[in-house]
Image (cartoon, rainbow, N blue to C red; front, side):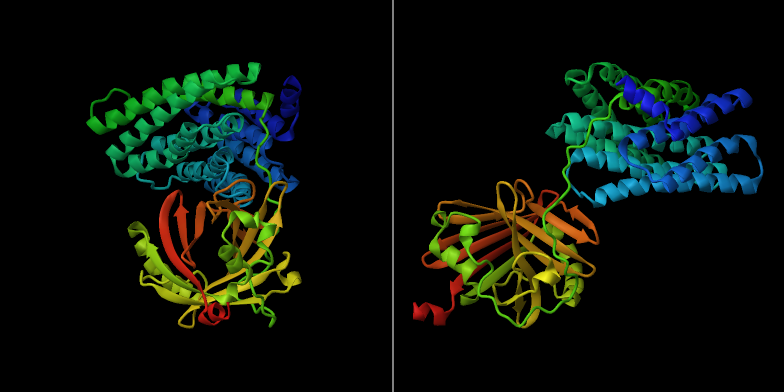
Length: 523
């Protein structure tokens, strides 16, 4: 741990930050109010950043320029130099936030701990904007002191706290901890909205924030953490529990008009303790040891096809060559295997039912989907015949094994163009389905299982299972899951297709699947 701390102290960004801070202490005497933010800008943020991401040389240079710009602001009153300095610092926050965006786009809505770190990195831009607003004396609707405190808020409560919660989540994670993460991630924005528009929103958001902080503190005291590091982490959260009560009392004062805590009190108590007891403690803690991420980068094959495309003129008979590649065929009804292997011999009828809460979005989206000819589901729940053709796709164009496209339409209007393939990992064979979109493609990686002769397919499974959006080199997991159940009933297949967004069902489709009359008669 001490080796790690020495490594942190020897980094150029840390040395420059400490040097700038020392220069300010020697040659300038700002009030403590200004020190709180300056410490974060010069030392806390750069140190934590380099514990999380690998910076390129040009990015380090921009951050150094930002550190020097923050220092220069104490020694100049020229408007033009002030403008250059605040823009330089804002640019450095954009560089930091770009890492949060990049990390998120390479992973998506998975791994709560990493999402919290991403959010913290992105939030720093808000701190940069409020810092700019203060120095340029922009009309934010608040007093200069509130503007400055808001900049502090986004450096500590947003950047440092969200990242700290994420790093703890790398070590331990529970369902309630995820709820606390959501509250803390939304907290800085909700509090800002409450201060701006509604005292009630402010008091409610601060109340939830207090609950989340105390809950995290309970977990931190309970969980096993590296010994020396645990002292600093626990000190940080004990400090937060005290200071967050001050925030609650300040919000209550604003709501009732009965002054219990005012701005000077917030600065003297809340600001000082957050800077010394929280900021310094978490920087030392994560400098001693930064837990590694548990996220494993996606390695499954992704279709290279984007937007409209033309398949070969070679027909394919089924969505798969052999169902035995995915599952023991004896575990499912023979008609289900027959459908997947000889899909063109079957006809489909579908009834689409949108969830009431999603219907406004579905109504608007249909105007877009008609132009794309993709994901173009009807708004009506009437049972409708779906026509379909299956064509082979050139593997070198798609990039996956034996791709074939299932083109479905309703009354000649395209509904789906889904390119089917498969891939394996150590334990499963997945159905790898790509839906080409403009400049991107959506992938449904489905895990198959069987029960009582029925077939179950879901993106809400283990391993690679999931719904992804591929844009350029990014593969982004979406908060979207689909569930298929296919059963045989009296010689006819029935299927249900349910889709959920953030765990809320928004789409249900009922299918009846029958062999065409010609095929049925020949059998």
